[in-house]
Amino acid sequence: MTYARARLWLGMSGMASLIGLTLLALLLRLPALLPTQPTHFSLELQSLLLVALVYALIQLPFDLFGAAILPHEYGDNPPAFLDFWLKWGRGVAVQSVIFVLAALVLMFVGRSLSFLPFVFTAGLLMFLLVLVQKNVAQWVAGLPLVSHDLTPQAAQLDQWGLNLPDILVVESETRAFTGGIVGLPGSDEVIVPAGWFRDLSPDVLAFHLARRAEAIQAGGRRRGVWVALILNLIGLVLTSILLADRIHLGSVSGVVTIGLGMTVWSFIAIVAMARPTRAAIHTLDRYLGVLGLETSQVETALSALEDRQGDEAATTYALLGESYDTPTVPARLAALGESGFGTDRTAWHAGRTLLYLSWVGMGFLGRALPAQLGRPELWALPPVE
Image (cartoon, rainbow, N blue to C red; front, side, top):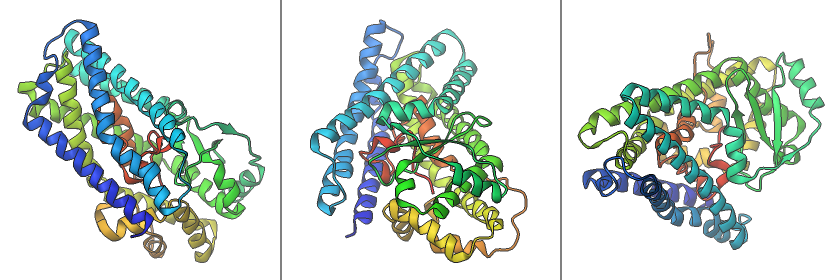
């Protein structure tokens, strides 16, 4: 079994276990063991911290195998054992703080106001997570900023008719880390791993920066953020309606029940968003076709990034097919030949964005993708193509 396939099976097992335990907790009404009415703040805080601790312990075996044991077995630059625990502990602590703070805010609004302000507040908190995504990623995983001369890339993108967006280059030991686009739409910043500058040729690097620039300029990233936010709010509302008989919005039990429902919804949503995400990738590829690159050059650029991610897309697509959101390199090259693409109305990686935003509702699926296991660098910045 290849390393990529081993990670895939581990990730699928982790997601299946998490969804199974979530459904079991809902079926057995386990959140009712927590305070079901407003009570002393200290007891509520302890209860929420206990939930965060239980989640971390459930996820720990999969994180340990994903970041330490499998890399050691396959010789994929495994971290020192102490380094793993320090990095994992830091990431868990930051995510737990966000879980607890968001839950406390929602509980306060739930007990003081009505359901609509509760939903509105959840939306505001998700919007805040978009605003501070760069900061969250740095708090979770460090990601020190490094300086690079971007003049050659700016000149190349200008030649292609694209504006070089604000670029932040960060250092990461994880080759699967791809950075991403952060900040509020309209004030977008592109995070790029420093390894790209070391491992990719200037043309390949410029191509991938052009992809991020086009995702911003064509509006795909903006639409992706809004779709992710709206889908999460739909999940929150559906959970509150379907489980209304056991949810008191101002209680620990209520927000944890919503979190369990959001976890199930997140899984349904990322599966549903697989096809639109593939369409967005193909559309972006075709938009970049006007750059005048030969097909062989595009293949080289796509394959270089796929190699850094450990052939994850090819392996996962071979097993999951149309339920996976990232097409293989051959599929992307074949789609380049399709005639016409019209106006871009696609949403760029809404599925993976909604996993990050689900932290607001204690969505426990937020860092369970196979590539994310044990890699805090990818928890707040899920891998993208």
